[in-house]
Length: 399
Image (tube, rainbow, N blue to C red):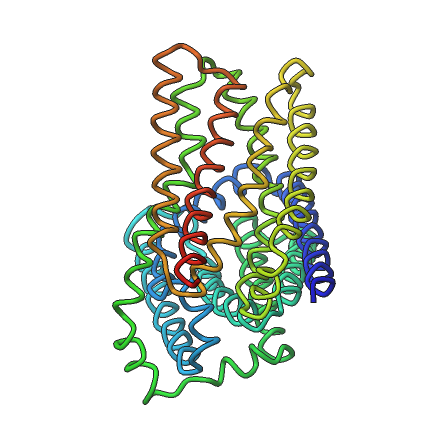
């Protein structure tokens, strides 16, 4: 089973890297043939759209992915929620487009893309629950390739920039999800799985359990944005801040390799197998994440014009990779048991430690690339220790 999981991880990683490479090529092509301004407008509109997408998490993903493995009725509940959220998003986006100037584009394809994101989230949950993570990333690869083809076709046909950017994004995503519905069994069965008589009572029955996940959503957003926001306040100059943020972007890419592993963990069978060989997987995935993060950080620093004298802090910063991977396993074990309190506590510890540590560095005049990198790594380690203590307490109570 361990070999199968490793092969699944490596296959998914290759597809993720392939999709990332294609997306990078598409970005360069868009900037060159349509100009940077339309692309920047699209990025800003996508950021604004992401605020509306909080509606998707009315039924939290980390709750749903395990719930549907235990109770088949939740597949219908999740599908019903997806239809409802898709309708609200469509209405909300179209209303904002025609009554405000929040979005730079008036293209209908913005609303279409919002709907495909709802469909993608539904597909992601079903495929993770079924243990078919490679298929999930294959759909991402298809979407990336489809968008590149559509951008090339739009340029050849002389399509206007706004139409080309939004139509390619929406139609490529729609094509990938449509392929999934027709050719991937969990999705083809899932989209027919709505039974009006069951899903509403299921949601009412478990609504109390669901709402426990909501504070964690807020904490996760704070945690994910704490490092760059505090770095801006603490580090002594714009040059130092730029070096740190560029390196941190490379480290984030390395940690994102671990996100593939986290998707594999969302299947109970995979999670049980990994739990039996926890330290092997922490070491194996952590090593890959560490090397990827180190390489990406160095490449980004070098390509940005920072000399070797500015690289000394990178090995310390990259030290967060192993505790980050360990945290993923511990968090998945908690979510599998529908327990969120310790996960939330671990994020609070991380945020508080990072905040207080940043304040102390600032007040003492010790803030530099090395000390802030060490603080970030220590905060990640503290977060994982909180989760280790939870597993130790559970093991003792079981005895």
